[in-house]
Image (cartoon, one colour):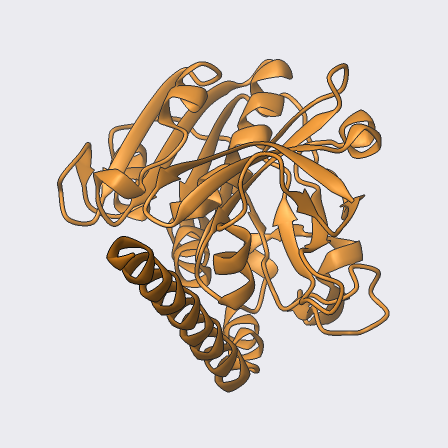
Length: 292
């Protein structure tokens, strides 16, 4: 079991966890992930390692509460424990001095883009970070990226902060302005990553995406994370998670990610009902106590 050292919300339903994991912190590299369970019979979920400290022995994870497991995880606080934590898993990001590198994070995908942006900067690149969210509240890690990037461009769908528009539109604007870009890393929702690939394709810019398919065991044995890259089948958890964006079949990836939609919705509804039961019981007990 791994102890949670710090837990705080950094956006709507987006929570940062600092977790005691000395062995993982010692070996972790940019782009790698872990798989965790919060209960013995719980679901296994993959989460990218957003940061780590080898000497102090901790890693950070950033979790968006969407499904039953992530919502349950976001109810944990400092001092609580994670049942199982396995990693680091996956191949580390390929880092070299490309020249000018653009790191693009969409929503909670920014948590994945951040460690790679740091590694790219350390390798001598000029780093431009483009981060997006539905509104200002959903833009995360801007200060952290500012500390490791030459330029940071926050974008919001509703125009409440930074550039009014999608990250792809900001990328296109940079290209139209004459900015020479040698490498692009894009991490976020599948439609966003696919759109980034189409922006860079005509320019022949090397573009890498970090895929987020269904994962179970993280070893490639279950086959749940199958994807198609350059017409060939890959297992994202062991062959990736990063691949050439111009070779990824995003259509099949999107279809596979919807495979368990019905089951996921049922699990979420059961989780929310359980929360209501607990809340109503607490409210009932409070009223009883007040009446005494």
